[in-house]
Amino acid sequence: MGSTKLTVTRIFKHNPDVWSFFMAAAGDSRPEFTAGQVAVLEMGEYGSFYAAFASSPDETEYEFLIKRSSTSQAVSSLFDHQFRKDAMLKQIVGHGFPVDKY
View: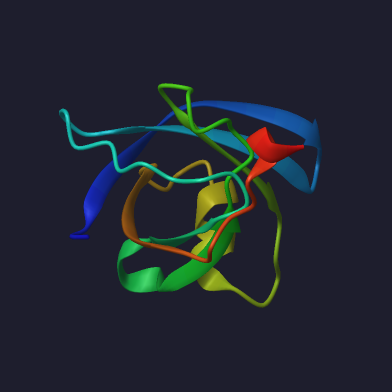
């Protein structure tokens, strides 16, 4: 899997430290994932971090439920109102969980 550019389309603030970031893939290059897998997101020069998919694999946008971090510049950059909200989906990792079997 190559990198895919993601753009934040909307944000839902659950509380001051936990926000849902909804992201859309550029063009038609939306990589598929299985429930339970995790994304590796890169925030430019701020670095990368792991983010669990909170959305269903069938939804058109990705949702990531992210907690503010004082130790990760990549995560902190998402919560900065002055930062341009683009990310790179570098990799999808894990085996997932076959929820359709339960």
